[in-house]
Length: 145
Image (cartoon, rainbow, N blue to C red; front, side, top):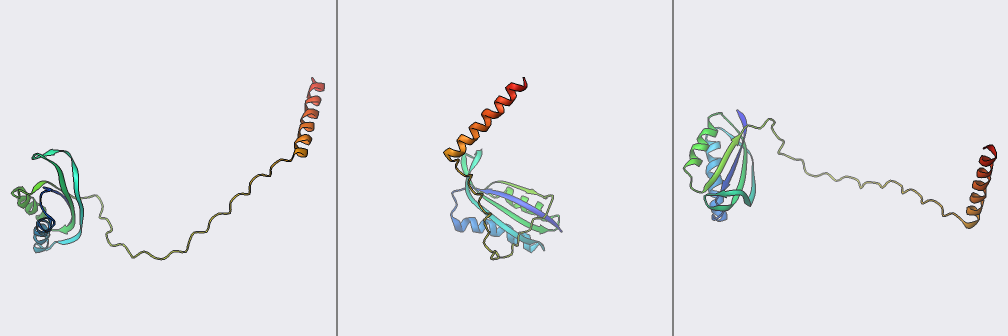
C-alpha cells in the first residue's frame, strides 16, 4: 500500500451537498478497494490561475489516502467522465505527513527577559568633567607633536 495525494478542482456552481456527494464517491471508491482515507482537506472556492472550461473559479479539495497501486487509476477513470470535475491530479509525495495532532497542551506562560536598564542621563556636572578630560587629552597630544 502506498500513500497518495489527489487534488481536485470542481466547478463552483455546485452547492455544498453536491460537493459532499462528489467527494463521497471518491472516498467510497478508495475504501471499497481496501484503501484508507487519511484526510480530506477542503480549501473551498478559490480563483483559478487561468480559465478552465470558461470558469474563473473552482472548488479545491485534496484527499490524502493509502491504497493499493491500482486505485489511483480507477479514481482518474471516474473523474475523466465526471462533468463537475474541472481538473484532478494524483501524486505520490516524497514523505508521509503526520495528520493526527495531539490536543494542545497548556504551556506555562513565557517569562519575559528582564528589560535592560536605560542608560543614565548625563548630568551637567558630569558633562563639564568629560569636556575637561577631553581638553586635557588634546593638550597632551599637542605637546607630543
